[in-house]
Image (tube, rainbow, N blue to C red; front, side, top):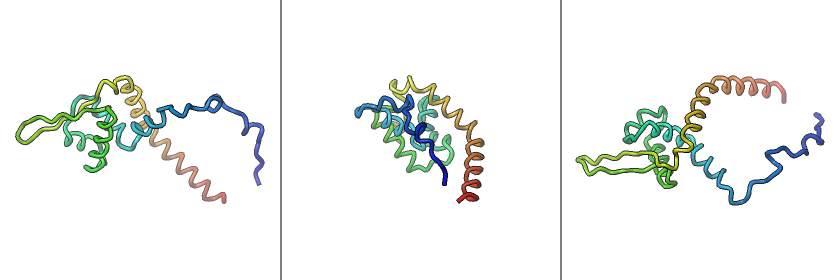
Length: 136
């Protein structure tokens, strides 16, 4: 049986010394932009307005349904706009709002980091899973 160092375990870290107020919007915002597809949609729209099919082609692995759900959620929360042009057939474009400007660079940096770190994260998971399987 392993021993626990309760003195260390019970110490408060800077992140836990001041609990977030109940009205803190951070978890909600992180859930919104941290969704499986939301960040990728926002990064793609950061390159300029896009039509649905352009987004669908640019975001590998996203289904039409999930793209629709993500776009509606981002629009509902004021992060993107949906503009319908009265062409024949009707043309729809999506674009980011000024609300997203302050987070664009950090979001792009996080996306770049995720691409670079993905192989190391996958390797760490495999190593952990192998060691966890051999140590009940």
